[in-house]
Image 1: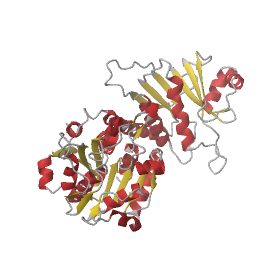
Image 2: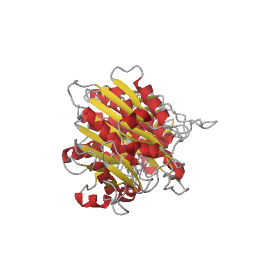
Image 3: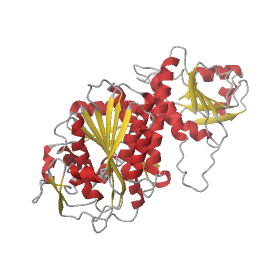
Length: 500
């Protein structure tokens, strides 16, 4: 898709579809007003007839509009302008909601060339770079398809090939920068979605390792190495290997290093849970909905998606990615409830439930990450159903042993519209993990399940600033819209860009 920012004349712009704004109360944007004047106020009359009053997300598509060069005209409602300090601006939420209606309004058309005039829309506390970035991310996401494994994939009519975003002379340079960031993030999100949607018989730990190597091919700033089970055993990763013990697929520890900053600068580390299929092991899950356990590697997918964005943007920062990839299967060699394993840190773990396996692979990955002397570590995992109960699918759960790191992640999520919500990590919850037979139990009972899972991980992060993102509710959707979301790639990228 070719995307650019230019100064557009609403009347003269030759395009298959021109998109302009209308605000609540029927107030036309500058571009819409110019079109209205060019057509003897016919647009204004038509909007009144159709009772179009500019509410957020309201849309009206006009074919062969009179008085302008565009083949189609799409009017989108952006809602009520603010009445406070930034009078006349719309909220960032309304801006995004309005843009998300553009693909919906055009999905039945054969439009491939789209022009959107954004320069006459003020958004509260957001600049042209942010506006362009959001538009690009939304439009590219609308083109994503999840039917590559069908014998006859669908042939959608609405396939965008060219998008022109209209800004002013003063803001077009900023918008161009936003386009580049938006495209890179969208490409990273799409990679995470593609990996997440693949079935477990395709996306194995070995497949994830090959995808990481593919990303690094021809890249001078990115290198990848893959540790096999023999090497993990030599390192003492008994916790991680206890999860793969019941699978015919060998576990992999995938290590990515992006070196864009000063050699002496400590890296930021991203640690991803990569359970490519989770049956629950001996603590077998119910059959209903178990197919969705192919999404249990979405933490790993988000790490790979983030690295794809990094190699496109080439920021001046050092980043390490560590992915603990395994299946969790029940066979005669599988770990049993009550077994005790020894982690790479030397701490022993009583495995009370083999379906609490994510923390077992992550704890060894976190210990391994120490060797890079990171200035901050973020792990990303579809870790607990309890987090879905607590936060639904709107916000990722955030836990941290460092408040400055937590606040930086929360701020990045707000900017990227990929929000997280901070949960407690109090010592009060640690006692739920006590074991009579080992240093720690791998579950803490039904109360506060997402918190005790984070408390478990915190036992392995005492030597560095650490944050844990529980994405069990945000990494994929169920039902008719079933599919991976690619979250939290936007949040992670924004956090990294803020740390350049």
